[in-house]
Image (cartoon, rainbow, N blue to C red; front, side, top):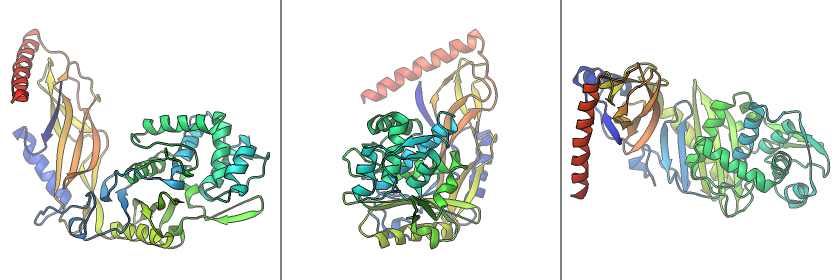
Length: 414
């Protein structure tokens, strides 16, 4: 089976016009030009009029995952305390699956107190040594106060040691699609194994928003008091940008200043990540300006409704030669309000798909490009069943694949 791509405007004349019309409606009327908001090392003239001073940055739509802007988005850097998002995601997951209870308490070890608490001199919830603290309060300590001791107590309590917890963090990260991130501890404190890109931090933030709506409000809490010490949330956006309600700041000498932020305005939620900034004030300014630019210049448009036929996949040995494909969810993409975006949508799948095919079976995806970068990708499923065809049909398909295979092999040698 080979990986196949089909441009939505290049196959099957019966539906080509319909799909072209849908795309035209989605991007708006008027002249279509090649604007690009999603580039590596973006310059102002290449990024739709925006230029970020952050060494690495990304801005995405939380609903669709559509990328509005990126700059060195796949460069691995020290994530500092932003990495705590992975720690709390694992805790959220364990609570949601019933393995952990919010009321469950863990004891503050000397190790977590000495190297993560007040004696360490870093961010802390000021947990008392040998005291017991509930998972719920430890989460608040980690999120609102960025407590290193909070994370270490959770790690030791859940997995027996921080090292064992890090193994679970890595496994969980791979499960949710973070393929490049690596972790050396639960806190983000300096460690050569702590590496994340702003793209994967944004993906993690979006995952938390969509998967844990019951826990997300914790990121918007403006203060938390523990051990009679009141601390305010370190997120500067909470007090400076309307609709801001998350996420997390970070700083280490190695990684510089970084931040994951999120805000909701007029029903649209955006997520921003910057890293490697030299100054805390510049960090706050960069994240705010990126979010404001996104809200000002973009809007969400529908390309395809759920269950709308967007294309067909070639079938091997089936009763029918093609199976219609529909998206598993509505396909939406963020576009410029001035209608200047040029979008290209393609169906990508491994094919031909062997029969029998069940209705609802996952078959590839529809990818939408803005310029040279994928803006959004949505899984596709079979709209109807396609049972095994006759012996003659299977013989014809087999002969066709044999000829195509020979041609492919010949082309590969050229």
